[in-house]
Image (cartoon, rainbow, N blue to C red):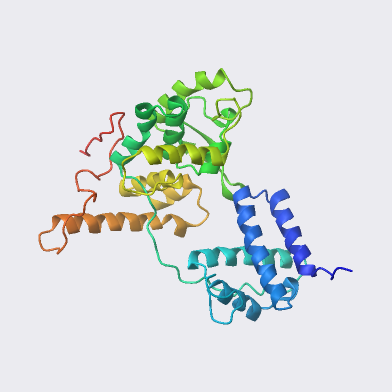
Length: 336
């Protein structure tokens, strides 16, 4: 006879089902939570614990295991970065909050656990002239489907969209003038997004081609008429990232980072940027103010005679990195 499954493991499965069916969490969130909670369940099993009965001391031991602390149970070579440990903590916190909410536990052992201090890293983004050059790649290279791909890049950038939000865009969700639309973001939070004049032009060029193939209502499709998946969008953007001469490791989220950075650099209130991005917490948006500060440091280092710094290859100059309007030719208008 197989040993009885700990009740906590069954509750982990029930919690993930609740996230999918009730909270309607996106697949990416579900996969991350499932991996974190599976790791937590395995750690509990190794120490003869039932996740349902774990206390705060046990959870601290789990955090130590993820961090690679000696004698913590995961062994050497398995140390996770602080950011990954904090994500696992978020998964465990969510699980125990659900247990309390559903009456499975009276106390929350994860409620007092603090995140690890993680090094602050600046997001990868493109300056305005770099973004203009990147958005022109579909027409210049002709490697995939220029009309569709230019529309993808400009819609993602000008709307500040996540890749999952871009994949889910539908024709009924667009505004009639193609200057924006409604998207469903994380936590099922719906928000209004706006598209630039260039993005509208790209959509006007794309929609007739799409209409000749598609039977559904997804905005972006493949050549067979089916909807583009998140992995398909990621593959398309990676092809253009390979073609670009930019000395940066580009990924789809870099377009969203660029959107936020350009707004903050242009003086947009950070709370408005938070609304446009669909961030639940203002602290998530505030990292883009650090990007602006880093830019100021670079400008000072390259321009001031007593700064002790020399201009670095590829570093933005004050003239080339000032916010301005993206044009089709990849130029930008200086501010008046």
